[in-house]
Length: 608
Image 1: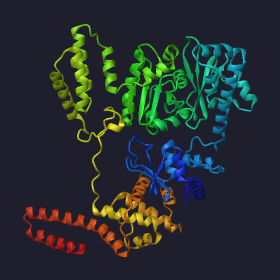
Image 2: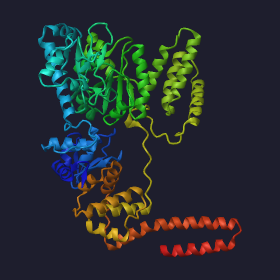
Image 3: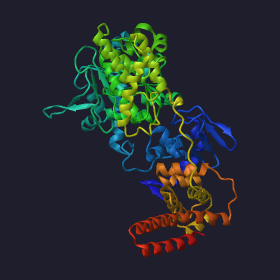
Image 4: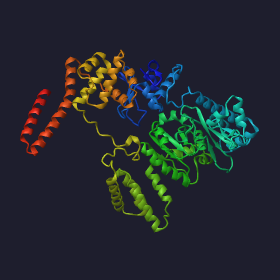
């Protein structure tokens, strides 16, 4: 068995080398609870631990969000890796040589050109950093950075550099190290001349901020001018390494903090991230000089539960925040907004008022989306005149009506009532009218279980208790649980039932299990889960295995379960025949109805 070009023996060695409690323990604080280890789930926000690791089976399962699997699946989920990337990551940690190639693994260092491109970017970053600190050309740039509030430690920590004004400084340096101009162009470091006569440095007379991929490798740069010339920032062009719609500045450093806080702070600029980092905001990131994208939001949703938007206090920054909110909410992230004085950005606030004031007045008091929308709306209305006040109040009532919680609605409506000396009851009537009209047009109005901006995740409405599974589903789950642990019982079930399970995922799990044992492999829960290569099936298997049934299992129980499973299609057939008999009776065909009733009786006898 192999996956792509990764040998099954490699997967098995990786899995055996990484004990699941040790691996998960690097990300989650686990405490012993009988034969299990429990902790707060790293994949969703919770107060009561529902995340469980079973050392005996080498699997994890969360009873809250349903995620589950073995150690490989955990790394896939926590790091946002594909299966091949997770295997590579775990193999490198184990000191195993990477001797295989995986089709589609775009960042594989086994690709010589990509490997050389990464190396060239790393070397360019060191070269730019050296020029900033040690060349006459870099002194003006370094003085500019120090004037902006950065010190030598921050400059070194973020490997900030300087690209001289010369057309070929970097080109000559890298070519002297054996890098071909064509490769350097593909890496985004050089640009071809318009006349086709050669190449020039892409970045010139700019302060250079290296951009790292999520694994920490430098994949590109952002170059900033020190005057008012345009463009203010120049990014690496789109390459195999650099896709700005999918990259976030400082993500590689912030991820460790994400896991602890389950929260990210999204800034607009690189300087904002760096200054905030120096102020103690270690979970700060920024987009690559572009608006927040769906890809950015999807990436963050795998890392955190909430995002605090700390955009500039000017009109453009607030408008950008308004556009970012629905993008974050669409992927299930809770959005909060840190409010800055009008016209001020985070960098300026920290420089003027200091780190402690920034943390205390800005970061520790983010407002809800509703509050931010009210503040944003207020900016667009002149409240001195009667018409402006009226327009603002009606717009504000519409914003409040977006909330599903009547209690939260009343809190905001009371504020409006007090400020504008209006009747609370009239405001509530208007709000309820707007809310009702919106509910009618919402396709999911009867299933609105997620209210991401009605308080923090922990205070969302608790989901209703799961319904009791029908007997045949409980029988299938128990049978599969035993089969995964016992090859003889699996073979017995294969002979008597085959793949005649009724739940789609159970059919698939049984098929994989029969194939697994057909290779002569011994029962091994974690190894079987590794063979599935399907997130949904891995979750299903982990859930089945974690819900233990303490009742005895013997031949009699086996036959009882099989009988319960086999009843389902017969019961469905009886239901179909009853509908046919009823149609025959309504059509006046008494003989046909009687014949069908006889068939139904025969089917019911078979069930007994």
